[in-house]
Length: 577
Image (cartoon, rainbow, N blue to C red; front, side, top):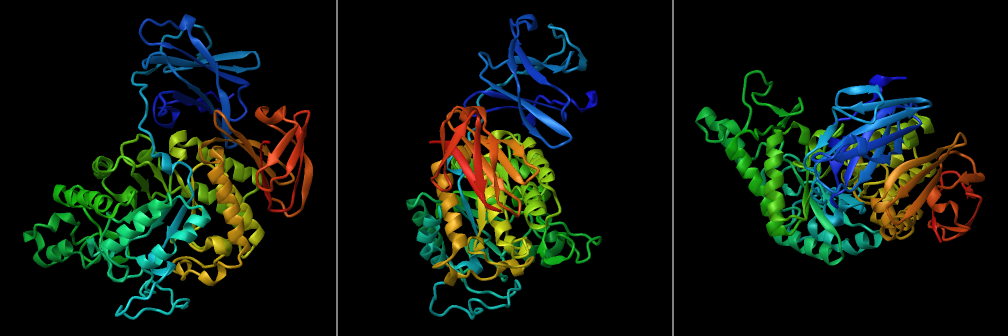
């Protein structure tokens, strides 16, 4: 028995409160070590562990090395003390703040909760909705008289110096398409004045690139999206700027005499005389958010666009490289401007530092989950068991309310497109899409993936949108079916996730649950048809007839089982009829 594997911290993902005031407590142990884990808790003042309340904790996730047990309860007093009782056969252990010992009913060193008050709610609109990422230069273009010369739509010259002239009027024209696709939030990469197609080297944070349009165009787009129940999130690039940014030009010209000199990091140790984004991008100088004037400028930028353009939040570029206290200030400023706004970090790694404490970001771009999806569906480098372990590992990291707003990608402007990553295997991409659309969080569709667009790594993944394919695309129809289901079933948007079965034949079953709904998702990840019985979860085991929400067909239950029939790469969602 690995006693050292037993782990609990009285904060972060291990102990947090939900927006309804319930407390969620988790314990991590070695995989397969314990038959049962019980949470024992009592009021801190006037309570006694000899009369502690007990909750048998639910086994939630296992990554093959560790597993996590969880209890969710509503305390009668926000000040609670607690410890854990662990059973393995005839062995009983107590885990408290002093470690793990032989069990006894009393506890002299309990963990404490002194502030079990309701957590700040994530915006309701952002929980589990479907997202759509637009790279504005390559999405849609409406011809504007007198505009600068741009690449012909469909040109193969996709390097970042070539501009295709996609614009906000084009996005506005596509709003009905986005609504029909079932999109709930549009995320647009940078819109501000720049000399590249990607615009991550911003020259003026208060001016939309004229090739894209105007403030009035953005406001008209935001209002049109809102009329359809769709939100819009902008890309904030506050880690670095472009060479044309006026404060940088002043600082470079006047040196230490410039009022903006400390907005940047100048020094002989840097190859080009100043710190940059990455090592080789001299055209993107790094900003210094520890400078109060620099920070104040960008705090105002954050408020300005929410107020003036009616946008609903920010995705913040290269967030782990920015001074953390700036993000705390930024959150306060933006939430004061619009309490329903959303803040999403761009962090490719474990993002608990940024998302879990509730003082910086609401969520992150969940590339840890993307990595598991790529390894299994695209690269075929993981087995199904390894994939499930990776998914469970990702689930262990965050509180449920953070999980509900994590952005889950198959592709993005920084990665090769999913169909290309799958070497053109449509079946595997469709299976990955099913998983993405039935997993917790916000599934983000990278523009054109719904049409099966291809493209290698940046910049090839930034080809112009293939609008000619929208009239007869089986992939688009498949996406629409899944987004419609996600919109109609709250359990797919906000339910918990728990593995039900990892079949040796390639059948993958996982349970999504809320307090009132249960859905069993099944996915055939093999290359052959599967037809066999599966165990049903307790919430569905007594049902004589179940409904496959994917097809509308009835599936009969018997003795807690149901026979499922799935073609290779296909999925089904079993719910109560």
